[in-house]
Length: 105
Image (cartoon, rainbow, N blue to C red):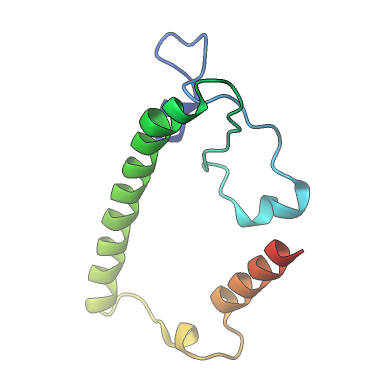
């Protein structure tokens, strides 16, 4: 998905313009495959209604597919999730709190 929107079919102009570097203090919260753009031209709303919306739908579909696969693994006992239900040493919860703190500043 990322490569599809990073460049156009003609390879001359990307479907979504480069949004600049993600701020250094935020890079740890974003996948290198996240779509990052800044729209400021007169076609910005049109781009959101078409390209951005399509990319959002594709990412959402992929996310739901991955979550279904993970749930299958959980149901089959292939994943030990004890650490995720314990509030002590919970890396997922700690990461969410750190992100909220970053956004607050």
